[in-house]
Amino acid sequence: MLRVVGGKEFSCEDHGVAIIIPARFGSTRFPGKSLVELRGVSGAAKSLLLRSWEAANLVNGVDEVWIATDDARIQEVAERFGARVIMTSSNCRNGTERCTEALVAAGIKADLIVNFQGDAPLTPPLAVEALIQSMREAPGVEVATAMVRCSPVAADCLRADERAGRSRAITVVFDRNYDALYFSRSIIPFVPERVARPPVYLHMGVFGYRRDALMHYPGLEPSIFEETEDLEQLRFLDAGVPIRMIEVGAPPGGIWEVNCPSDLVSVEAGLVERHIH
Image 1 (spheres, rainbow, N blue to C red):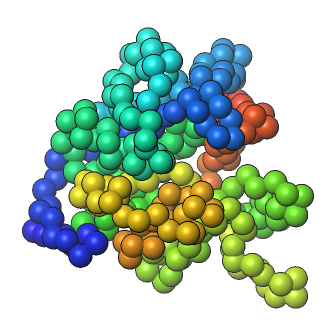
Image 2: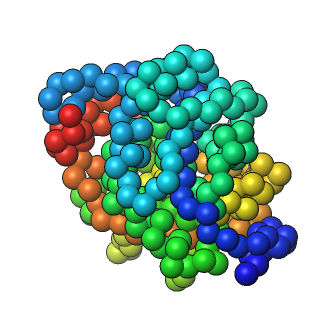
């Protein structure tokens, strides 16, 4: 069986599932965040990296879990808690490029690769399993990611944050086939006050890629929208590679990620609400 990605044909064989957790020390908005400690319900302090790795290891049906980094400090901590680590270059412009480099450097043979964000310990394992299952059931889907439908109250809170100049979430709009039309750090769609508001969908930052789609990514030209929004997935859309949206239920404690120091409070609250130690 052949698949077409970016106008090129690739063979289709199933060689399992691998999770790659891209992690870097030099985050622009929060340097060193991978090693910052968060407390769960027991009060025990664990690094953000360890909590994300533990969450990734709860996903069923995965053959291997790797941490991909360009920093020796992260490598040392990760190896200390027993993770498989692959060193990548500092030239990777985003997590997707780092996953691509890790795939080659570690000799990972999996056909389905999951990019599990290293700053998202509240990512529900069930959501990742739903993403994997959906891609197995739709072999023509090259890239997929998860989303959560906001409650009206949560959507109003996001709009209030936006008016106050705080951008805490990525939202997405999609077509009737559930293929993404656009992702934004603004709340989309825009709705005038006098119009009934359609639902707002929050993007959950976990991606599934077919191996060949991931390998094709670094050769694609970054788009102006990717650079403006600082959202790596927009490169796929600009190149005409569809991204299938998988809707999952909103978990207790939310799906907050650690993008800046102020997010630590929300994530720790989520850990406590889910009774994560």
